[in-house]
Structures are given as structure tokens and as C-alpha cells.
Image (cartoon, rainbow, N blue to C red):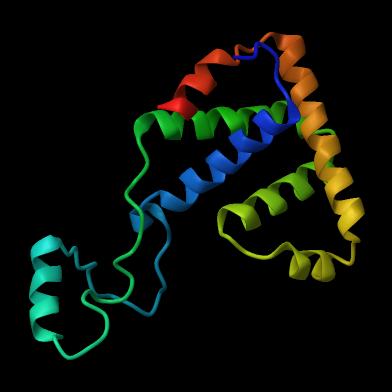
Length: 158
């Protein structure tokens, strides 16, 4: 195990934070103003009933049932810790902060980065350099503040 923060560890924490954010339930988010109907909460028995009624179709379950399980409390705590790092250490560097967020969001959503670079009108090399500069800023601050690494590595292994 390592006792120092590396660029790869910080990047994996950002990716973990965004994958946790994606797995949060939608109840807390704003709904569209056009719908006044209550949200239907389905369970596994509904899926079995849907499978029995849709025997001739290729999909045994209705589309949209492949949403991952909600994150654990520990994953949410780690996500909030990453947001605190982001605010504390990258507030004075908006370009680096934006590039780090956008690239981590695309990676967590499994979206290609080439369209992102094209829409931002930035070369791939410059985008990765900016992201690496942001990761180095966070890494240096975590090392300076002596934030322990071992706690996170145990979560990755488990």
C-alpha cells in the first residue's frame, strides 16, 4: 500500500464520486412541470408480472429497469469529501476545475471524450494537460494537508 497521494488515486476518487452521483435516486431532483401524476414505485414482483405478460418480446423486463442500486452511505461520504476537495483546492483555478469535472462526468457516464473536445474547441492534448494540472493541484494539497490514503484504499479493495 502507498502512503502518498498520486494523480491516479485522485482521478479514481473523482470517478468514484461521479459514479456515486449517477446512482443517487431521482426523488430529490426536480420533476417536469407537465406531470401531476405521482411516481409509481415498482418492485421485483411487478417485473415478474411484466415478464409473464410480455412473453413474446425480446426483453424480459421493462426498459429502464437496469438502473444500478443506490450507493452506500460510505460511498456518499467519499463523494462529499471529493466535493470538499474540489471547492477548497480548485476554487482559484476555474479552467482546471471545469475540465476535471467535465472529463470525470463523461467517463462516469461512459460517454466518448472526442465530442466533448470538439464542442469545447480544445485539443485532446490540451484537455488532458489541463486535467492533469488539476489533479496535481489536488494531489499536492492533499499531501500538504496530510490526508491519509490508506482509508480510501481499503474501500477500493472491499
